Length: 419
Image (cartoon, rainbow, N blue to C red; front, side, top):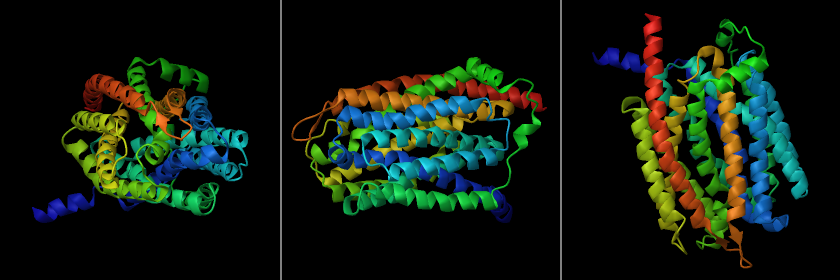
């Protein structure tokens, strides 16, 4: 009994699947670091490049809007090609965009560089999720998402602290140079060791790419998923761009303490993430999403209304808050992978990624209009952003309930067809 149980655990993932989980997690890590490193750099970039809050919001949202546009344009073609070739093409473009960020001398060039980076980076995440759906059964996708979403925590542990250190002690350009080198090494691994992903090509595609795109967008089941993603992203992206400025100027945290804050929060969430993924497979994706949402709501209300606060209190708040956010991301991502049919996976994931990026861009842009920086560099109206995040979180609990019921019906229908 014990030996058979051990064997089944050993066979949960093949060695190649373990490699792919690692590669997909690393890909997510590089994409997230590239996006998230701008948030802590905000406290450095705004005075360095003489940017106002709304201009910094434009830099953040510029990436998101271009990523959303490219995802929609790529959606019709996403199921027409080997996913490995798609991944390599867009990752090369992402590296070029990041290189342009490293070379940026002013606000205008940086904005252009972020748009280029978004054009390619915005599609990579959707390709990764399509690969997960192709390679892994739904019963283990919560675990896979748990490991892949560890990239969010790893970006806090490694990417953001290192990026902050380089920006503080060398130049704000340095984090982007670091990413260019690291991503180039990852690209070599993908080209050398990743196998082609062509199973979806067996499904017949009788319509041209533009009709495929239109059919995917107009699918009523998919529309619920897209609408849910919209609210998830809009709320989530509002707090991030001004988090570092709020911490350093309102909460009394130094840049070195900010690095430590991200480091400790990230380590804790790297440990917690896989357990959340496992729990979502065992307990259910929706219950974990609800728990994560309630935890996030409580912490956001507390955090956005703080004044000068001791570092250890901020660390506790951040660890709990990011645990709630991770629970929402892991559970919702695992549920979303069930929705599309095989022949629509690439298109669905591309459009969903686009919706996420565009919604996040709107959230970041609106956040830049809401917050105000005083002459002493304090951030005003950050609590207003918190209330908006709470409202969107409450609405998404209801929308995820509807989506969870829809997923149950889809799985039951597919099981009946398989008999």
